[in-house]
Image 1: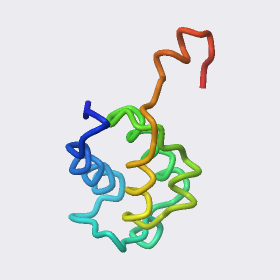
Image 2 (image 1 turned 45 degrees about the horizontal axis):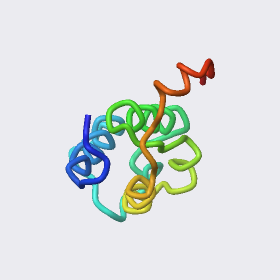
Image 3 (image 1 turned 120 degrees about the horizontal axis):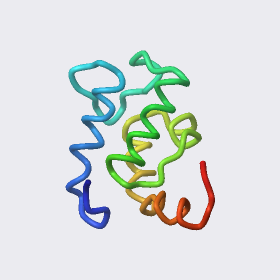
Image 4 (image 1 turned 45 degrees about the vertical axis):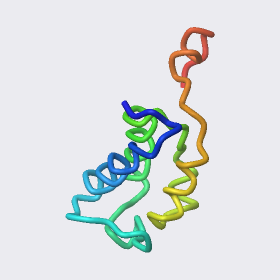
Length: 93
């Protein structure tokens, strides 16, 4: 899992896009949907970002910011995901 305050997670963020979309590379101006993404793959991407990178990037962020560079900017501002705390408090997603 990456440390949120640094930028070491950015390469992992890119790899998640590549994995979910089945492409060889992504660039700042690439659009998730133009690369073959759809609503289910957007859900998968947001889930992986939360689980693997510990960043609170939700499905709506992917849908509303489908360019790679735009979603990366959202991820840079996202707070750490607090899944463990929500479960401990009795809340489930």
